[in-house]
Amino acid sequence: MTSPVRVAVTGAAGSIGYSLLFRIASGEMLGPDTPVILHLIEIPQAVDKVEGVVMELNDCAFPLLKDVVVTDDPMVGFDGVNIAILVGGRPRGPGMVRADLIKANGPIFTGMGEAINAKAADDIRVVVVANPCNTNALITAANAPDVPNERFTALTRLDQNRARHQLANKAGVSVNDVTNMGIWGNHSNTMYPDFFGAKIGGKAVSEVITDHEWLKGDFISTVQGRGKAIIGARGASSAASAANAAIEHVRDWFTETPEGDWVSMAIPSGAYGIEEGLVFSYPVRCDGKGNYEIVEGLELNDFAKAKIDLTKQQLLEERELVKELL
Ligand code: LMR
Image (cartoon, rainbow, N blue to C red; front, side, top):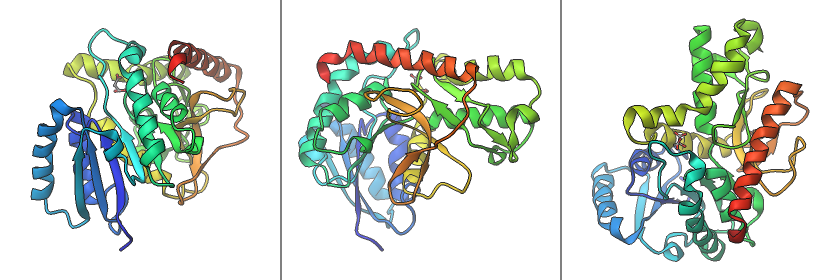
């Protein structure tokens, strides 16, 4: 057994938190040999609800769960924390796009960044789940100047998973057969799920799925619009699948990516013609020690380049809207 890893979750009383915490405490995120101490951070009005969740966590008698800290103060909540999962923020409702949340949620992340900067452990790693997650990660990083920039990431694993399911379903294969699923850009309606680079059973997707109109059309729009479709159907934004993606994002950050494959993470930009200063999703490979690198040398055709430029433009616009927070 190693020493416990301190994992902070903001918005701990919310629906994503409820799907997330039990899986972290059971060892699904960091493995069966890593004890955890949960730091649950909430707004003051929701702290009582968190206490109820803690009762349930205790009632699970998870052997790996060594302690739980509950607080409404980020300076307490991020103290000594190794991994921060930033879920807290207003979720999107019917009729809204994720960018509509920018004014409500952006300012929350200046405080998160300041507290992480002041209190987190030296090896802190952060994933932002709350939308607009790329730009919220940018704000967090900008307010934590002493923490290396590459430690701040945002969640596009949900999009990777959505894309893999769509391709597997269309091809009539298992999701395990769909690899190399890169998501580029913003977790938004402009993201680009790169089916040209993805593979099914080791073959190019476009060889296995011959309906190229579907790939260029409905496939992309389904992945881009999935969050909205779920809100329409459920009356609430995705929760269990977002929590699952957050678990997989962190787990894979600390796992060596299988040879030849890659995963998608929104990370500080600066490759493939995207200037520095954004949080942009790329295909990356992780080394098993908490480091990632962007997959180099991928061929991007004109179709892909145009899509990637569109999502970059949207991120530049989002950054402009929050420039006073950076
Ligand atoms: C999702 O993609 O389901 C979430 O980011 C929620 C949303 O606003 O779409």
